[in-house]
Image (tube, rainbow, N blue to C red):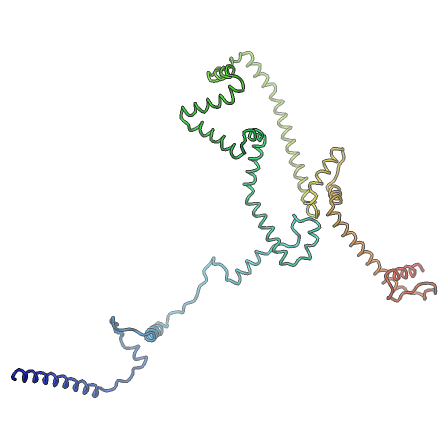
Length: 385
């Protein structure tokens, strides 16, 4: 019984202590006066305490803090953007510049087109012309970029052309033949003594002994390898050669001067011919189409001892070309029709302006409502009076 009494009293003391502490806390909260909210200026003047890890700064406080700092630093000049030199233009100007650079000259049709096709160039829309000229420019660029490769291929083909029958006889092709030859040259340059000896023996058997016979070719090869030299020249012959060279020296000098003068005159003639060709090409519309035909006509006339000018050769070549002849014929017909129309209009105006008596009864009259033939006949009859 004594133990139970002691435990109950301790529990009552703990409960009394907790209730007393709670009543004191409530009393302090009631007695604490209300704190008025501080204004923004007061907050700005108060020192800012360093936040602890548990405190979180709101976005509004950060904005107010930065705004107060901006007000205090109001004497500083505002930021102005400075345009740096050598900077690319603005998007609008840059686009205009690109459009200007991308525009092509569309006054004339591409020179590679046929004459009859070039006649329709003026009727094409500008967008189509620009696209066509763009494509032509791309083709020209690609041809210009591959010039060296095409020249190299042409040079290789010309070099191998005289030896095509050897390549075909061996059942090979140009690429394989070049590879075999370069391999043989590399082996002769970089191989050791045994390798070079084997290769020379193979070449000797294949191209020497089989063609000329063993004894003859071996004898010739031995003479060459032994280094046998021809007998030295006698002093008398050497003196005669020296005297001969001295006597021919003035003639050689004169011949050299004549060659220089001839070369100079040829260059002058070529320059004059080139200038004449450039001047003629500026007004010759179909020159690229008939260039080869003109050269043939000029060569043919020269063989006959006749002189044919560029204009004459150009006219003959144009009229001999079927497509160009059709174009020129249509143009002439159009010009003739225009001339006839202009003549009729002038005659009609002249008939209206002629003053005189009324025409005879048997003369046909025209009040402007007749046909073109009637107007012409009327005008001519009035003028004959």
